[in-house]
Length: 236
Image (tube, rainbow, N blue to C red; front, side, top):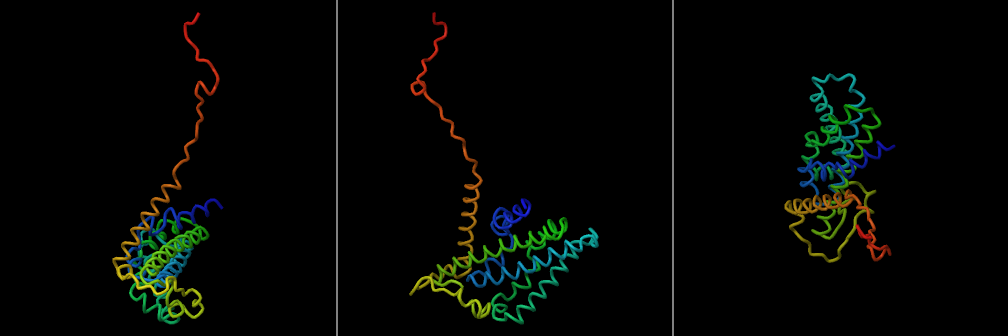
């Protein structure tokens, strides 16, 4: 259990794909104009990551080290193609919004990196846990970044969720700030860099504060407080 706790702690916080490793920044900055877009891309990426980790962990005894990387890339590309077709068939509006960034999941260094560094060296259950942890860590950063840009930029949260994700997600649509004129800068691409920089700085500060060792308090009593008389050497 301690190993799984460490895996989830790394994926969600310490070694987060975005905040800790600074990977997958291209799709992160491109699609997070709203929290809905971030949630859609995050869930698609997590699904590919889970399937890839489990498949590589199961097939690692049969894959030669000489061709391991090309085989892993081919496997990830196949899973991304399946995901792209599924989104196009059942979530076509979201597929149109995410566009090219769904096929580009193939080049996501986070997925190939976890497959190479973890799944190919561990059994199925730890590989599955690592994929879920890393996927959730990537997804919550996408949602937070998109949510901050959306709230500060247009005053809404999870706008068009019922259109992009389906009618079941209509409860997520919120008007956070009534009669809000909006802040165009945060909706445009420069806003992604600004908000991401703030999140990275906040993550560093919180991580340093949480890891700061507590200094033991040593109570030193003065001579007056202890009531003892100072000793005088050489006194007769």
